[in-house]
Amino acid sequence: MSGQGPNGWTRNIVPLGTRIGAWQARLVARRLSRAMRERLGVPAPMAARPAVRVAAPSASFEGRALSWKLVDNAVAQHLEVTLHREPCNEIGTTALGELEQLAAFVRAGAGGARALILHSNRKRGFCAGADLRELHGALVAKYDVGGRGARTRLAIAHEVRGFIDRIHAAFDVLDTAPLTTVAATHGFVFGGGFELALTCDVIVAEKSTRFAFPELRLGLVPGFGGIPRLRRDLGNAVVRDLLLTGRSIAAKRAHEVGLVSQVVARGEGLNVARKVAEQASRFDPETTALAKRFTKPLPREELAREKDLFVEMMASPIVEKALEKFVESKDVRPYLP
Amino acid sequence: MNRDDLIQKLIELAAKRFGRDASALKADDDFFEKLGIDSFQAMELMTDLEEEFDVEIPDYELQGVNTFLKLADVIEPRL
Image (cartoon, rainbow over all chains, first blue to last red; front, side, top):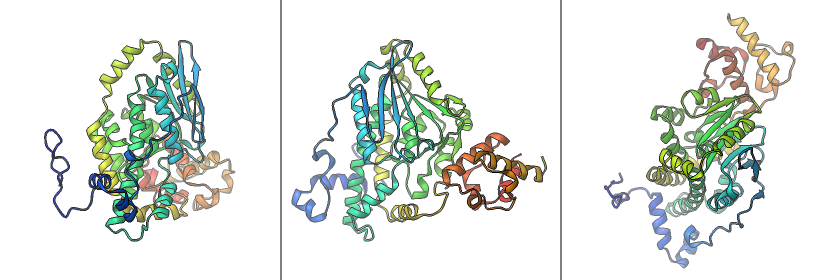
């Protein structure tokens, strides 16, 4: 078991012989020489790679996974971000790159927007989570996933770590943006999609919305910051119910437990979110930023622990088998836990 | 609501959701096959049912449920 010192120094002390963990993978990979990395088939650590190229922040953006534009409301301007990747905005490398561009724009002041709305124009829902097919494909193509020797586990852990670090960085920017953020949801808000919605300050859910964390059926915990963010907002009992059963809850139930601010009719989510954005735009921006910082602190330590746990789990044979089963499944209900 | 009424209501709701003729559906039909629906559509139907009957249906109780008869078995104890 990891020790936990009061100042975090001893947090990563692990007895010899313990299965290789995420922090170890990271540490070892950073210390490996280039030649050694090539011999082991371990990619360069993310920090050592060229920084992700992020285009100059722009007031409007048309991407393959998402788009955004500044919209006038009666008071000021708000930013509308539309997720539009078929079938249901699964988050893979394309979406991640564009989320990073959005994060850069928000960090640069979001063009003066006073609020941000995140919504999907895909019929099936807001976002069905991580792109598991891409993830599985990438791991199969890159590594001998059947082997799962220490080398492979190390390499996979390292690769996943890079992806997870990037997604957390983008999500953290959205979470802590000094403007009011509103998720307008409908249909599927599953896994990584649920985690994306949880970065927002307010969730307006159409009646068709279903929230779920189905990750345990893949042998994983949610890895995009979902549990720490959900625990910040809700009682632990609700979090455990969702996590440990993997069941989905409808907008009505989500409203009852305090996850959702407003439940609205089908097709009305964006309209209502615009009204929320307009109202939020009336207040002094600095006051809004202070109020938000006070009521919505980023659970940094828990997020860091979640990343470590997720990366470690990703390298396990259980996940490999579960991902394979999911990808090859012909079940018409692969999302049902 | 007795069991027969419940099953009839389930058939009507499914027919309405997926634009089918309710009279063409039977209680022991495999609705995945008969309606040709996928997981996303199954979730939509589940949400409709929760709304209509004001109940919560945990997804895991729907494992293996593929007929209106079996669906009634899950919903009936919650009414």
